[in-house]
Length: 99
Image (tube, rainbow, N blue to C red; front, side, top):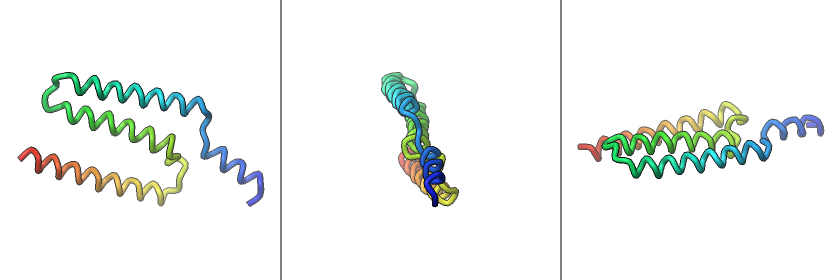
């Protein structure tokens, strides 16, 4: 690889500091939203709300901080398979807990 290809590949994988700060502020806001939702009495939807907010935070971390958006398709498939088995584990956990 020559130097020009290396520089273009590095610029593809990096974000500016502004993006990191915006994502950090978004994560702080979502954390505050999680705390606020835990304080509300919304019955059985409390856990579902917390999981949806946590999923949004995980998406931000995976795509921005871990640079998953610019990875190869093979690596993305591995992450999707891992998340799939995590989802199955949660489904089985909540099914067992509810009965």
